[in-house]
Amino acid sequence: MKKDLVHPLYVRLFHWLNAAAIVMMVMSGWKIYNASPIFEGIAFPEALTLGDWLGGALQWHFAAMWLFVVNLIVYLVTGIATGHFREKMFPVSPVAVINDVGQALRGKLAHDSHDYNAVQRVFYIGVIGAMLMTLISGLVVWKSAQFQLLSWIVGSYDTARIVHFAGMTLICAFIVVHLALVAIVPSTFIPMITGWAKPFPKKEKNHVA
Amino acid sequence: MLLKRHSSEKLFLPRTKQVLNIERRFFMGKALSLGALSMLTGCNVADDSQAQGVLDAMSRWNDKVQLAIFGTTTQLAPTYTEADIKDPFPFNAYYGEDEVRIVKEEGYKLELAGLIDKKDSWTLQNLRALPQQSQITRHICVEGWSAIGKWGGVNFADFLHMIGADTKAKYVAFKCADDYHTSIDMATALHPQTTLALTFRDQPLPPKYGFPMKLRIPTKLGFKNPKHIMSIEVTNDYPGGYWEDQGYNWFSGT
Image (cartoon, rainbow over all chains, first blue to last red):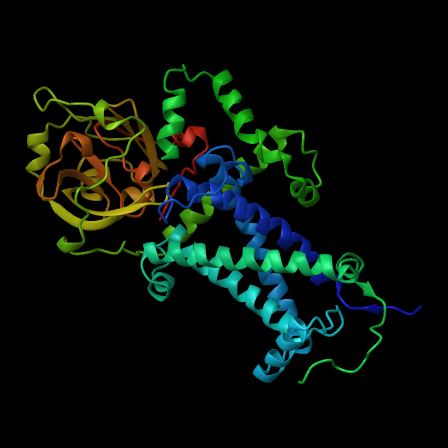
């Protein structure tokens, strides 16, 4: 059977490198957070953290940071330059989102790798936004004296810590939904490894564009 | 307070190479159970020294990047108002507050060593007679918390020039009365806000904030701001530091 290339190589590379980077950033970040929690009473289980003490967690965080940032930049530049984003993520009209959320709630929304439905588009754009938000606030936490323009945009050092935490929370929320949907629609998993998917039976767009 | 807890666990151990190696192994143990890492690097996850080598190399790379970022700007750390000062200002060290070292002013002399022309030692009286500057800046701890305080004292760049320090040298190292030691890059030493602080909130530095003097560097994390300084050395040989030798990033700029 003829198959379609739904995820070009650079998308797959980005996806898996990013997954590894995010796992390292989040788990080491939890250890760093635990050293001085922002929110009274909220701490992460030590078993889920990376690095055996604060010094180790910081080493992981600031090493994985480079993988996360370089990978993200390559992805964004390639995605914009090739028109991949425009083609797969846009447009996202509010009507389509409402329509598709309604369908999703009735269990009728198609979820595939060819043509993202409006809910998928919102999620993928949203998580890229959350990653950028976490990145920018993280730069402020790291270098509040050096990156004062970013500091001014994000707020104070303390605000930047909260924004950084909020960005992490959004990314984790995305991961939970993302993994749940892969479990529900397992046919989307293999194409993220091989790039290829069976042609989608319904070639018409399944959402109002 | 992980920074402190870790130190209390090991405070009684002589810090031999073996002990440090054991710590290293311990520190890597849990980390390497992650399957994702083998996927990422393709290296043998059982070989913890290999992963630690990568982390150490990345930390040295981060030193270089931070120095480059720092060197390209004459950026001053943000300053605040008296109303922003945290009261009480938090105490932090590798030991508890009940173990604060008391240094007596009588007999105290700041010793100078290394690539310095005039190595005469300095009494507090002589240092107080020099022009003083003060700043209200944010102290950021490597643990993540921060607090705004006010420090006053001698502009460190002026002091280095006055004593004929070789400002082309790479490092300035500090030895402290509480057996702490650390070192900074020359660019930071010459930064206009870097201050040999003799006062906190316009009063002589209390013991818990580092009497007789602390190097106040608002462009670096708290642990790079040594207290109870006994000697200053200018050198080209990497001096390391108490926390730095255990894996904390050496440059640690903010």
